[in-house]
Image 1 (cartoon, rainbow, N blue to C red):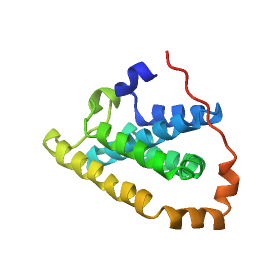
Image 2: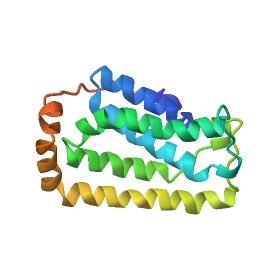
Image 3: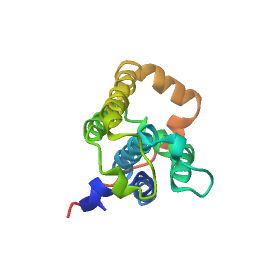
Image 4: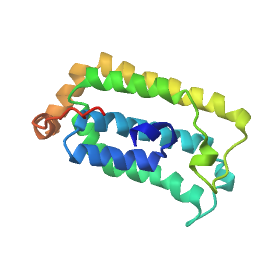
Length: 169
């Protein structure tokens, strides 16, 4: 999957993130998860929602899949990821940088109607720039976030999890 990285769809990235997490490659899963989340949001902002269809249509199903994946997987991967806010900030910055390049969405998502290509670059720039808020929060509110994690039991639940290094091939 890594060699086909630029052609992967956001559902494929979410599934990869889940699998990596389950196999103990949790730091790598955080990168995959945030890449999936970015591509899913990118899909959503570039999709022509007036032409996405209804239940059973690829545009409709994928649009709603983004939120479903995030809601189901997010609590686990974010629970782990927010235990290392410096590392998470670096991952978010990397995803933000990589996300500025728009993949061939029509090839990745056949049967989906997107907005006019003239709208893609400004919409994607806004999406990428919006990640600055998350990076700032991770850097500036570490103590507050850690306190909330402790209060909610997340620190205890996730701090014991380890992460293996993904072998390079």
